[in-house]
Length: 106
Image (tube, rainbow, N blue to C red; front, side, top):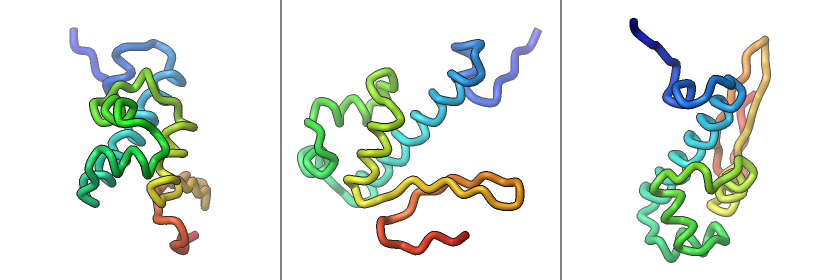
């Protein structure tokens, strides 16, 4: 017997909506971690920029998904100077992250 999943979160919950929310939180955490790394921000600077303490940032970087809501993660993105933008066009949903002030193509 072989089990196949689109992503790991389908393996830990039978609720597909819950699995989707966990995957979305995970994706946002990875994006934030990548932004911090690509800008060579130290923990103190990144935490201060995101209006959180360093212990919370360490939880984020270490993937402690249960400690973060989607709202909190989108707020962290905003404080780092980015916006989370969903676009629905021609029957397709595209979700992207852009720097604040950039023109988002429609």
